[in-house]
Image (cartoon, rainbow, N blue to C red):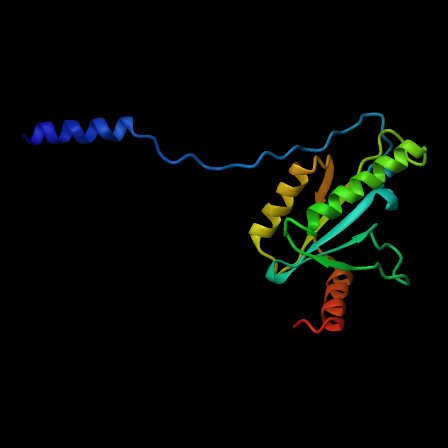
Amino acid sequence: MVDLGFLLITFFMFTTTLARPKTMEINMPYKDPNMKQEDQNKIKESVALTILLSKNHKIYYYEGMATDPTKPPDLKATTFNQKNGIRDEIIAKNKMVDDMKRAGTLGVKDFTTVLIKPDTNSTYSDLVNILDEMSINDVKVYAIIDISDVDQNFIKETEAANGIK
């Protein structure tokens, strides 16, 4: 009887499958061998959308990269809602870039570029959700970047102006 028990235990141990880990596919950037060193990290302001992930699943975003410290960006707030959420803003940015390509102001190789900057108090699930949005909206060029002190101040000033603590 004991031998039969051990045989059954061994059989079930070898035939069961463990839970498979869930993974997310991330495409690494393409390295163009003909590109000059100084042109590798250049992003046009007209194609850039900066997304700041904050606490309580709040998302702040602005057009461009806010490289001019004397002129702060027009920071807007949104959430992951289906209606009037970040998806609508990404779709609008994609459409704007496509319209600029058709008009001839942008080249064929210019794509919507999204800069994702998670704040120190944002959640991991928010980062996964925004990466899902990149996949859903077929955003080809995006980067996860450390949030700067300037961007954190933009969030604090916007929250203070709206009475959010």
